[in-house]
Length: 247
Image (cartoon, rainbow, N blue to C red):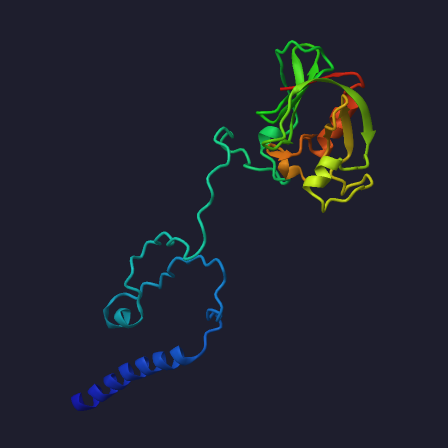
């Protein structure tokens, strides 16, 4: 009887290993494709059930710790970039869906300047335009301003207002950028946006933009740009003849 049990036990163990080898040769439906994806996130190891120890545990058990371990870092992929602005309050979205820093969204603020209500004050270095209101208040708008080499300042007045203005690039701009169109009718694709407020006898305007993500940046050839919804709001408030102070 003893001589017969040993072959049976050995056959059982052999059949276990053979079954494992056979299953290992079967293609897995979860096989990694030939071309790996650009970003691969490693998954935490799968814990196997506790099989009670002994020889069966040795064959089929997982000798890793039973408590789930934290997943390893991604194999590929760059870490999240640091915040663009250090003064954004914790929990505030870094950028709006339009790609704008939330601090440049339109809001009413306290204002202690000497300008009369109805005036416009353009704070070029800080990318803000203020429409002065009575009672020490102002409506503040985020703006895009002139890039280095095109900045300017001075005291002017609003001379005209136009809805969905046509765009005719001045000769100086065409000389720098000859690929620009010589005329573009007003509309959603027009770089002057939904409204334009003309400043004195200058070539500069306060206007809308079909590139809202440029708000808060020095990008223009001298004009002051706002989001379309903001320039529509400002247009409804400002009067022809109002003072415009550019700092």
